[in-house]
Amino acid sequence: MSHPHHTVFDPTGRFLVVPDLGLNRIILFTLNAETGGLTSRHLPFGTTQEGAGPRHISFHPVLPYAYVVNELDSTVTVYAFEKENGRLTMKQTIPTVPSHVNGNTAAEIAVSPCGRFVYASNRGHNSIAIFAVDQQTGELSPIGWESTKGATPRFFTFDPFGTFLYVANEDSDTIVAFKVDGKTGELQPTGWILETESPVCIVFSSLR
Image 1: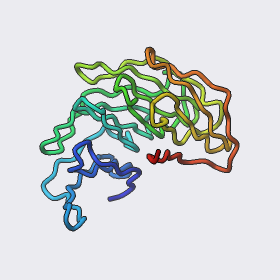
Image 2: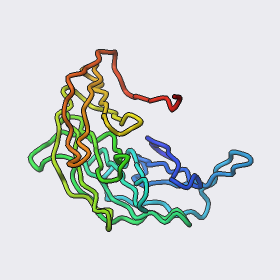
Image 3: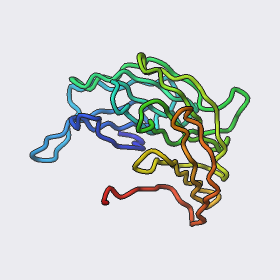
Image 4: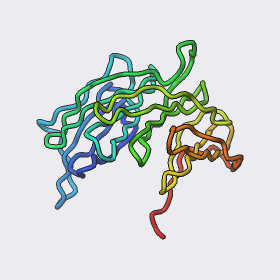
C-alpha cells in the first residue's frame, strides 16, 4: 500500500476497507476472526477516477451503497457494494464544492444515521457539503454548503443520536457544533465553540 488514509469494516464485518490515496484505489481485506490476520488475495478492489485521491469511506446504514470522499479532486463517489464478495462498483461522482471554488481539498465523509443524507468536509472552502441520498439508487443530489466557522475542517462526526454534528477545524483550533435538521439535512450553528489545540479527530464513547 502507498498512502492509506482510513480503515473501516464494512457493515457485515467481513471486509476491512482501505481507501489508498497514493494508489488511487480502494483496497479490501478479509478478516480471519480466529487469528486476526488479513488477506487481500483474489479480492476485487474499488477503482476511482484518475487523480481523485480516495481518502475516507462511509457505508450506508441500510442500503447496499458506500460513499468515498476524494481528497485531490474534491469529489464524492457513490459505489454499489456487494456484501457477498466485497465488490465496489462506481455509480456516480459529484463535486464537494461549488464550480467556482479552487484550491480545495476534501477530507471527511459521513452518512447520517437515518441514511437520508451524506456530508463531506472541504478544506479551503471551509465548509460541510450536504447531499440528499436517493433511497432507491443511492445516488446523491446537492443540498448546499454550511460554513464550518473556522479554518481547515479535517474531521467531523455525529453525536450518538445523530442530532448534532461536530466539526474539528484544525487550523483555527476549534470544535464547532451544529444542529442537524432531520427533515432537510441542513446544518444550523448552535453557537457552541470549543477552543483547543489543532483538533483532528472527535470520538464519542458508547458507554451510557
